[in-house]
Length: 250
Image (tube, rainbow, N blue to C red; front, side, top):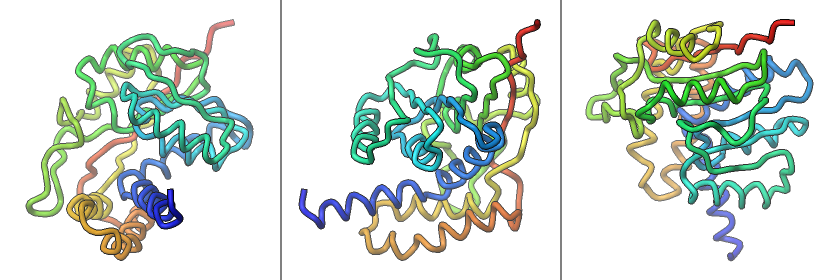
């Protein structure tokens, strides 16, 4: 690949990682997992990792963590493995897995499943398998769309990416987590109107020439930073669910 081709690939990946919804998911995952690690090593499963950009970013930021990304889509996993090899990241791996079946490895300190549960027809089976992948005392972090979410800007799609259900009520997702054998710890509203509007703008320009998307980048990044500071408005479009697998009795 030529120098310009490599540069374009780097910029395209950077823009994909910095899409507002993805940037917000990364910030939430890093916050929750860093708190769980307490400055020490952590073994993490990224369930429904897709192209692996979240997994890779966490692996780069936390060299003493061991991360495994799993997804059904072999083409996306192939690209993720190539990126990991290109960056010499030895603390991350990727495997094909169906979340409705027992997962390939157990005993994780933490499992993250950010915006994938609503894509799975048998979501209850997926939750049971996510719980089963945790070590006793391990933490599950989910982000799911709110059941009654709607777009912010006129003309934006009212469908969350690849949804098979529109979302979850908070009591419903808490009950599903408990039914999977986990103890709910927190349900935190996320992804309010500012970040949602920024993501809708990004979706509208994602097919635009690269220079146009680069010009929009500072605004999109700023929207997430402002949202993280709590300077936003409107009803949340998603909820972050934290739950823990009970420790084994002694």
